[in-house]
Length: 328
Image 1 (cartoon, rainbow, N blue to C red):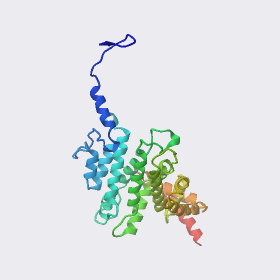
Image 2: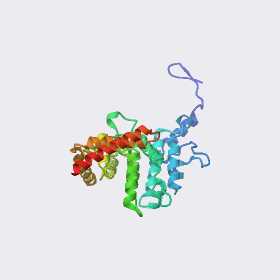
Image 3: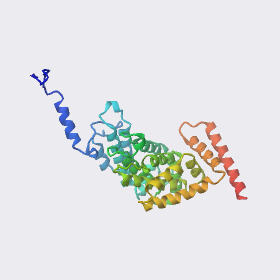
Image 4: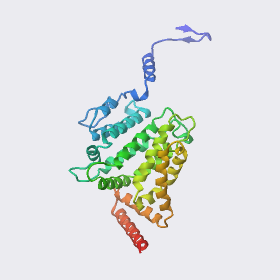
């Protein structure tokens, strides 16, 4: 015990010294090198105690996805994970999926759920990944008017790698590429990929925060996001009309305005996509197309009722009638 200058007795002990020392060591490490001290995994699978190393060494695309999603869905109260660690794992998972699936039709087909050239799609897999992409791309340590402007948040990297993975899955390779691309496109759109892309373009692709050190990353988010939207709406009036109804046009215009001067790729992709969307917006029947596509998406969701499917079929029939009248 000692007396300080104000005459107040102080007791100096070693309580908390080990925690302070551990915090100092952790603060000297970049966040992407930190290993979360949690044990996450399903029954019969190895725990994800060293999640980054495990993801980097795994060559099975399904296992990579399961490791990433299980880690993100773990109970936060029972683990020592922080938001940055969740985002770091999400970024690592998407980066590994891009490495495994880009230009590799075998991994693309395995991830999407195809079996023996039977072009079926595992919609639950798509919904899980889109949900992770949308949730983990949010910047939470800055104000709402500074989205994407944080140097400490990994949301921009998650958006970048997530959209890069979505783009490579929308452009499948291998035999039957054109047919497979249409099936993949419709599956992703049914699982609300257009809404996630629009959200990421608003939050991260249109980032104009002056002190942001991630302008280059934000520019790539805009590039990949606009390219994904182009593939989702190309040659599909229903998809284009629905994308217009959820604000995709405004998100693309905002991202294009932010990055077109320093990125010819963003400018070229935006010009092509905006041409399709503006042409569709001038079509008097686009609202009917959008409503029909909305009902179709609802009918394809888990738990859809017979009434939902009937409403979707009736809307599709009305669209067909309008198309026939225009063709005369």
